[in-house]
Image (cartoon, rainbow, N blue to C red; front, side, top):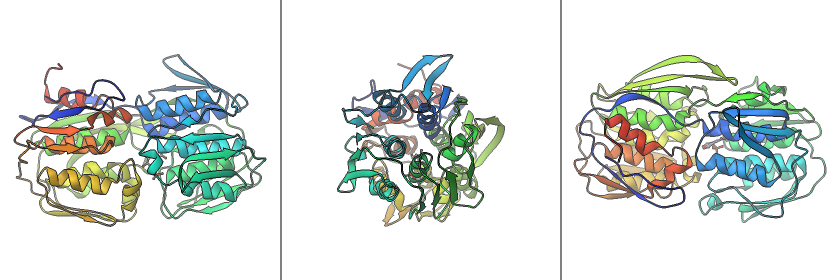
Length: 447
Ligand code: S3P
């Protein structure tokens, strides 16, 4: 049994007992975080009532909601979801208080673009982790559009001053980042002329899909390049947020790690710009079955069934699949520790700029568990062994990063003695019920 973090904000240590038998069951996971942020924010910019169901329950999306409310957006719980009453952004006003984006990069970067477009004065702040993450990547293109925005040595706090109308630009981003792309496009929606973002690989396209379903016309026919004309209005829609594949990755990996397991996740988003994780599982020869169930809000969704029936092949992962699997790499590192040899993950330098340096954090965590790995500048090599049982009896650190906490908890299932995950309450960011779900899959009673 795993012990559970109790309340958000409280730092707790989870005790992960080894799996004594197969994991079994069917579950749904929290709503997609990326889509949830966008559904609320775009709703506040739109005409009409945006009804959002299945919203991600974690702290990150709560940050987007509270920032929007601090700016004057009207959001209420009704009709089985949250209703955002936008009036073409007219209700949004400058806030004297700093706007707290918490741990959420998506909140800060997308909000910066929206506020720049509206010319509203604001200061965006975040927690210690968010304040270490690079913000010039959004500030620089916004400045080129005419916004007045100051970073603090390239980081938050972001100070935005009142401006007039922005002008469209062609922004060539050095990184494939949906946050950068979305920030610039949101500013571009209110700018003079056309705004184009060109990125080295196509990042997740939730912004493009949701804007399209809200009546915005954009051109994304060329891979990695998207353009829109300023001055277009957004019309509110109903958004049914699918389950988050980035959360589903953890029960799926847990099932693949424990022999005999059979786990199915239902209603999960299967947007092809996000399914690199499933491509890597396929490369590893994992027994994973997909069933497309339909589409919701322009996003495909379905079920994923994973069976822990065989030893997995080691993999070399690099190139464009990395962008499509970026959030799931920590889970894949944990899985690779039990494959039939050395796996290498490259071109993943962006992982160093997430909620923690995820390359270093996973290298430290896996080594503490007794797994040999080599930290590379742009990734990680992990020496796998399908027959290994980790010793356990150690404490690993989440480094206050939700994905690290869950990835190390999955690896700990394959230990002889219990493993303590310090800072386990970080799961509140994206998957508050993770430890309960893990216990349910083990068939154990909740305390
Ligand atoms: C996100 C984009 C990705 C991802 C993050 C969510 C988004 O970040 O890692 O968790 O919702 O746009 P980058 O844009 O920095 O790659």
